[in-house]
Image (cartoon, rainbow, N blue to C red; front, side):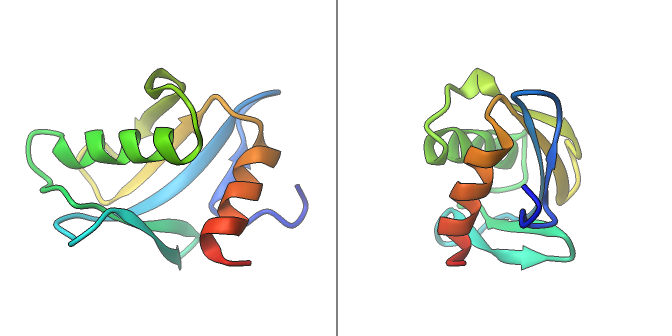
Length: 103
């Protein structure tokens, strides 16, 4: 995991922590590169009533082939900078990030 992007860290033996910077009200939901040490994710949802957070969790679960319960928003409920804990090995998340970021 030495070559992992700065947005990814280890959160236990089989868990990962992902720092995300969200951009709500986008045309489509998807990753948009790295920004200031976080994965920038554009969300096709408004930042109202938790809709953007729900969209982010659902998108990450789908992208990483995880159940929604394995994706938890631990920090940043109301802000654009968020921390997500994933019940997935850091190596698997790093491989997904490499594909998404085109590295």
